[in-house]
Length: 177
Image (cartoon, rainbow, N blue to C red):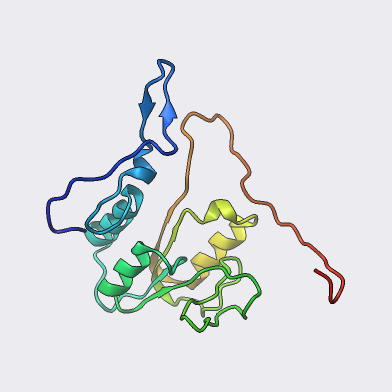
């Protein structure tokens, strides 16, 4: 990603602690490049795109983020990149705020079938209660032979899956709240 030699920055935020009290950095989240601003898992995703997928300048990429260094990098190198954030129902799905941020819901994407060569999500699925529906939507908008790349956080010391998202509907009487 960076074409020059840099010294990476690492800290002990969210470090794990071994039985002997030794702290181990969170290499996935906290190994940052001062040159490009990307953390380890983000550089790995870009590496996979560049070295394994080898997209062309004409490739159509959808990434479920639009305010991050990964989106900035992709949109600079691949002009047909579309990014989005989930803004809830503040504005209609598929539309943009005045600052250009597009609103999309991974469980109800507004794109036609077969729109993209690549769909990407970085640590998003753990926030979606109906993640199966979101995976189906991502598959729907992929072109035949398209590729989905996603990352998800994990705890290698955990023996069980932790539920990190639930769907809750709050109802307020009209005019309240």
